[in-house]
Image 1 (cartoon, chains in turn purple, green):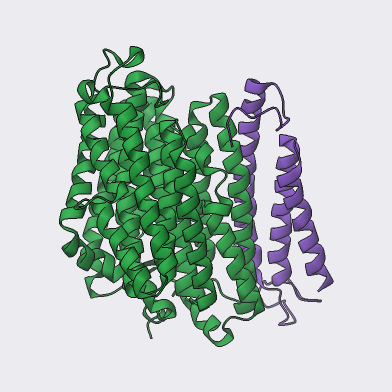
Image 2 (cartoon, rainbow over the protein chains, first blue to last red):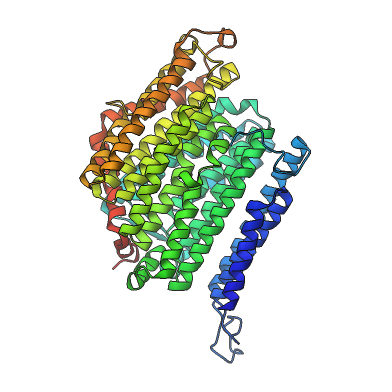
Length: 112
Length: 491
């Protein structure tokens, strides 16, 4: 249970960083942290103490496997995360070219 | 046939960059052709579902274990909205997008967006839904920033941050449900949640879903990104975002998950209704003071989506039918209005209503179609917006939510006032400096606008058969709730 709590704290740190930090690069790092917390949460769901990797062949002795499904899902989720991060980095580079700053307080030509 | 809805646009998205290396002009025709094929498919899918829902198992793995795609009446309504508006918007883009560099990238991203939205609509698996949602989201972030001007990049980044928070919350909610029921197939999940019912983890997941999809839909406490993001995009893309994306990614996904998987309860229903009422009122009040044509329309999107969510949240047959009908109608007239604003900007170079004027003489077609759209959104009979609003208001009175019904009526009045302002300033008053000697926009843009205007009138005049044929069966799927599991898993 404490693992889940730590995972949730990690998620909160990431979310805090994403929403409160004023530097675009720090926001991107915050997104990364929050994303990994969610990925970790999925892996924890399939985790079992002392279990083996779920490969079924004649050498596996026990029937005690971890759940392979969350691992497969997280593989997809990591790739999606990579895509989102790439778009975010690309856009912040273009923002830097236009505004000459990463500070969100100076990037406000739009009225809220 | 169901995988074609994803395969065609995805294939087009891969072929377009290759072909545009060979011949620069081919991208537009590939994109438009694939969208036309999708439109034909979605119209013909109306007949396929006559005998009941269709289920396709990807790779031959049967539903509870493999990924499945489901085509039921609700999906058909949503597919019709996506592909109809998608095709008309592409038709409009043929002329509009010429002024940007690298149009072939625009068509690639647009096809990817269509693939994501169609995939989201047919998906029968919760994680698959998330993946398609991400495809649609990433391509819309890129399309908002397409002009790469300072404001557009800023709006896109704002949407990226909030959109990603929404995605993370949705993924987190999927994780919570998976942890509770050990399955991701929506039908199977609905079945296993039946025995668990609304215990704490499921309620927690529901709250996460409502916040996540609420952010994507821009319901009022979560709406901050929409008035920036929608006006920043190129006009055809704004039409797509307001007309289709927020509905499919937000309202449809929310409805599917809340009604068919988790199961509606009085608590969830009242949360949806309150969110709907707040969005309706706040959206329209923020809209009326705007002077930027597209920004005004963006605020109206929030308000009109409020109607849809309120109607669906009522949970009565009439309310859900009204909500879904309004979803369809809103996609028609709001896309048309955004295309009109794009035409005005294309011809005059500005969107500021204070600088416009006298366009009803110089741009007769744009002016006439925008009049039809304005009257539709304001709910003037016999145009389409009137009937769906009437259904929602009647449903609210029937269900005893008098306050909600009164807010609906007042919102409709304020909407009318704010569109009279648009008509007066942009089209009817005498022309001044900037708007003298402007010319009507090119052929394909006119074509798309006229078709949408005709559809607005048709959906209003012929609403009884449309309601019976398309909307009522879709509402039926929503109302059946968790029995969705029965006809997907077969038993």
